[in-house]
Length: 68
Image (cartoon, rainbow, N blue to C red; front, side, top):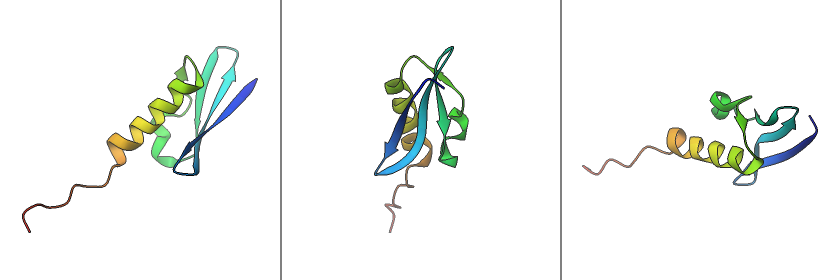
């Protein structure tokens, strides 16, 4: 690892974007991001966008039941 950038969500460290010989990759620290662990990205910003998108899409709270 040459460089690293912490990736945060709501004040919590969720992953690290690390620069290696072949470019940037994500190290998932939050278990909800395991699908992205070691995935390659062109830059840390792309890794952060992917991580936050995954959290929003797969782990958003269930919508409230409108049929009360």
